[in-house]
Image (cartoon, rainbow, N blue to C red; front, side, top):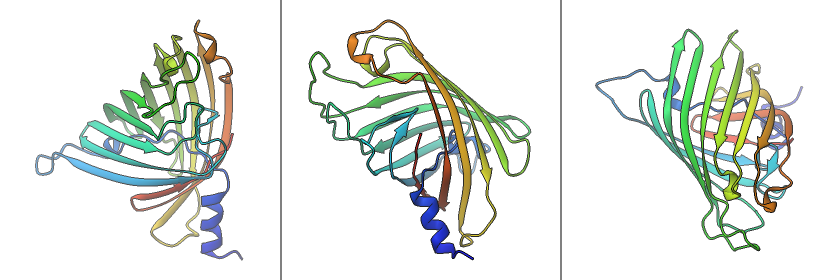
Length: 230
């Protein structure tokens, strides 16, 4: 029988993926005694993959998330380490939106985000790959252990290429049996996504049209350990 430590190491080092992580605000109710809520988490991944594209050159990466909620509204800051052709010092994600349980076990998130890549070194005509997008996600929990999600995202200028972009993704997450220490949770998750974009400058060539990923994720209180593959 494998030990809890061995199982935790597996969950943190094999290739996990999760259904879309909804903001913490989705699970909060307005509270006049505590109008603001702050949630902080950290993340480790063996490969930082975003919508089928590695942003860490197939190497380990670290990240964090700081979310401030005024339920059902939220703002979130998410820095990640990256290795990209323009050699930015990091990826800094800023997002804001509205997330709420609109029906029993049905949650809806709508918002906008901006991905900023500071310190980029120009590559040919490309001087910056920072961009913004709007997104909407719906999450349904048909059973106690299963969560299904669907996401749509649109950017008028993906990665500053001049091209519009649409992304659609469906995902699932299954809570796994409690074999880890009491304060740990882990799950099996996966997603299928499809990406499409309009006319752009040549540098946008090479973005994949489809991606599939599956794996495990383990978390402990506000600290999350993940790894990804696709």
